[in-house]
Image 1 (spheres, rainbow, N blue to C red):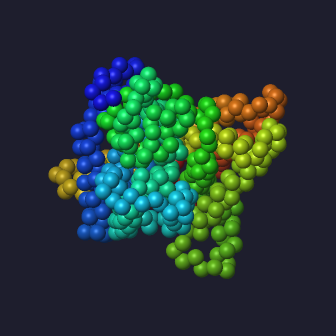
Image 2: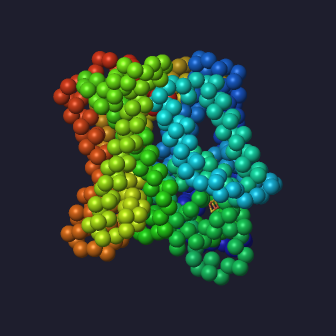
Image 3: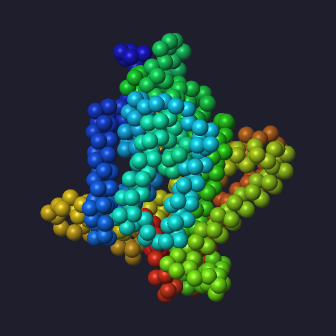
Length: 480
Ligand code: SF4
Ligand code: SF4
C-alpha cells in the first residue's frame, strides 16, 4: 500500500496539522529519539563523572523528567509514546534486526520479570532506603546495567523480546496504554485487499497492526510508528478515553496484576507512608507500630522500616481485598473465579495512572519544574539564573489537582459497570457483584478521604523528618 494516498478520518491524528507532523514525520521522530538518546547517555556519563549529589542533572533527568513526569502524563493521554522514543527501544530495533534472532527461552519469556523488577528492584528498595536511587552514581550504574542487559537481549533474541518480557517499564506502559485516548489501527477497506502486509513486515515487534481493532488489543505495540511509514493505511486515532476497556477482549493476566500491584505499590503505599505518615497520628498506624515492635529485636541500620512495612501492608491489604471481593463477585455472578478476576480487574486501570496525576501536577508546580530546569542549568553549565518554583504549596488553586483522585475513582466505577455488563446475570446479581468487585476502588477512595479527615482532625505531624520521601516521589510528604 506504499504510494497509495489515504483518505483519512477526522479523528486520525495523522490528519491533524501539528500532531500529524509529530507522530508521522519520520525525520522529526528520529530527531526526538536522537535527542533523548543523547540526554540519556550524557546523564549516565555525568553520573559517573560527578557522582556526588551536587550533580542534580542526572537525578532530575531520570527521576524527574523521564520517569514519573513524562511517562505518567503521556501514558494517560497519548498512550505508550514513552516507548516510542525510548533509547533502549530505539537502539534495540537495530540490534535485533542485525542480531542472532534467536527465540527467547520460555523461562525468560515471562512478563513477571518486568513487573517483579519494578516492584522489588525499584519500589521495595525505594521505600526501604529513601534517597538511594537518587545518588547520581547509583542512577548511572542502574541505567548502565539496564542498558547492557537490554542490548545483549536485543542482540540475541528476536522480536524485541526484551521489551515484551523483561523491561520493567514495558509491563507498566503496556497495561496503562489502555487508559489513553489514542488507538493505532488501520483502514479496513485498504487492508482487506492488501497482499503485501508491509506494516507487519516493518514492525520490529512482529505484530500485525491491522488486527488490533478486531482483537481490541494493541498487544505489545510501542507506538514506534515504523508501520505507519511502511504503509499509509495505518491510522492513529483519537478515541474515547479507555475505549478498549468498555468492550470484550482476550484478557492478559499480567495487565490486571500490573493495575493491582502498581496501585498498591505506589498509590496505596504513598497514602500510608507519606499521607497518613505525616499526620499527627502517624505513630498509631499499623506499619509504624509493626516497625516499632521489630525494632526491639532487629537492628534495621539505615533501612527505613516504617517505609518497608507500609509497602508490605499496602501490598497484602490490596491483594487480600481484591481476592475477597472478586471471589464473592464470581459467586454472585455464577461465573468462574479466574474469568471474573481478570475481566473485572481491568476496571482498576485508572486508579494509579489518573489518580497519580494529582500528585504529579501538584509537584510539578511546587517543585519539579524548578528542580528539573535547575538540573539542566547545572548539567549544561548554562549561564542562567536559578529557576524558581511555579507555585508555593500554600496556593489554594493547587487543590484543583486533588480532583484527579476522584476522577480516577469515578472512571474506575464506570469501567466496572461496563465490564460487569459483559457477564450474563440478573440486575440484582450484577449490582451486588459491582460492590464486591469494586473493593479496591472503594478502598482507594476510603484511604484518600480518611487521610483528609485525619489531617483535618488531628493535624500534621511534627515528626515527619524520619519519613523523608523517596527519590522521584520525594515531594510526596507535601501532598495535602
Ligand atoms: S518496553 Fe522498555 S525498553 Fe522497550 S521501548 Fe518500552 S521502555 Fe523502552
Ligand atoms: S504495530 Fe507499528 S507502531 Fe506498533 S510496534 Fe509495530 S511497527 Fe511499531
